Image: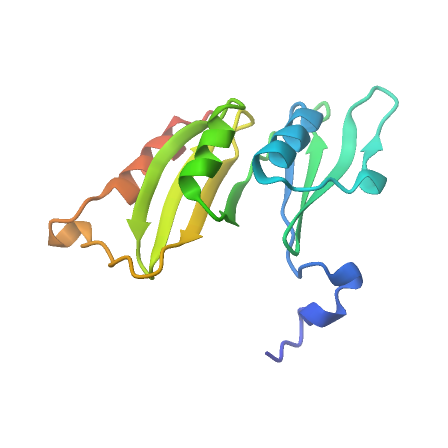
Length: 165
């Protein structure tokens, strides 16, 4: 891929990703623990930057080649939870781990197109996670307009509409 704007992946320092999400929440340290425990993602402890009052102005975890960056909301800052997609080995197992740590399932593991399974959850910080897993040999579902289920859309629609402003 030749792109005149984006840095080529092989040129990103430290072998990181070209795009990395950053979320701002209350209790950033709690979210770091949640992500680490649910996904087995290591925190880059050298990147952790606490302020004198203990709030984190920066924390970072590695999920594959992507770094998820997290900070505490400061006075006057809005919450900026994320919409995040993660590939996992087993959607149901990831949801179970997350739910045991306070998450809420939005979409139960559901067959999706391209031989994949999709599940969604909302963590206690209002981040919504799309959990994907390969499902070789699994047939594609019928679309809702052909009498198939609309659970993929309706569960997300309900979850997004329920978020506080």
